[in-house]
View 1: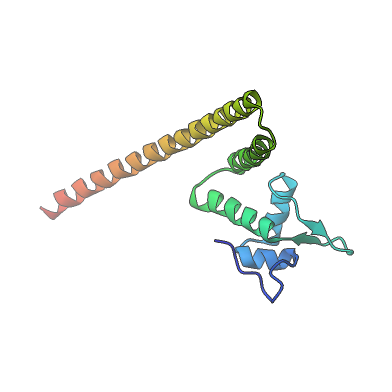
View 2: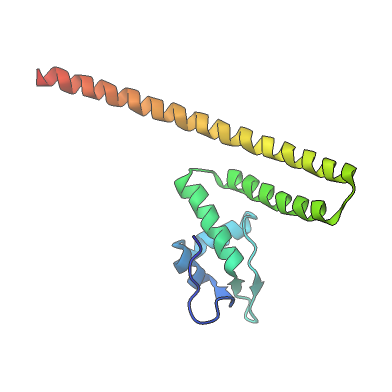
Length: 151
């Protein structure tokens, strides 16, 4: 869900405080994401202020959702973002050629990247499953103790 840019010009560039407010992040977090390579501002103003566009907002919302909602580390998010960039490059290369061998190679490389992505996601799902099972087990023990006390 992309935030609505204020004002009549939805394509205008925004300063970091505006972006932070729209994305419910701190300016410090946004600067940190830039520092670790997860984000590159669309530009800089004459006064060297960072400027962000709609793509930057969407990327920040993706980072925030993966971090907060899905529990991914910033390193894991970086890998997901790299995979997405590679997918875009592969799509462009695929569309630019009609050579069957080259298209096959592009698709095989894409399949390999997707296999890696699936493996990482399955590992995370297994870890979450183990955490859920642990909480369910503790909840069952608490329920048994409550039942014992209620008798």
